[in-house]
Length: 103
Image (cartoon, rainbow, N blue to C red; front, side, top):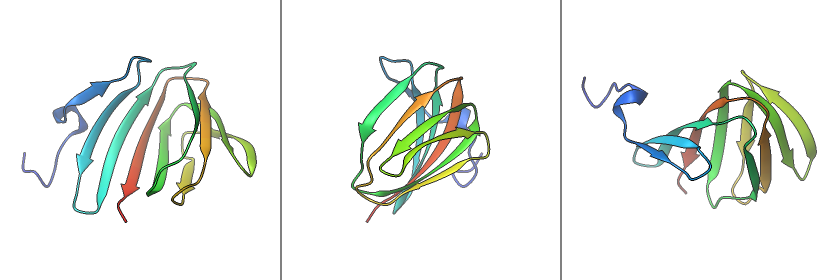
């Protein structure tokens, strides 16, 4: 396959101690990241210095921001401007795709 068309399975995977698996495809000013999160995982409150969009492909959980807590499931889309604090709890195995924009 050309580098213009790749399958996520062709991209090297990193695994965190908590079992979260990631594959990243960097571009010039954006990085796409496939994130596979085991059920029961908690992502503590954090923020990024970049803008981030997140698409939930499968799974479910709860997202927390300064606007409160909201449930999410497949089809949900998040948007975090730079510096936005957020946390999440994952009730089921979840697959996300993050779009991280460099500024």
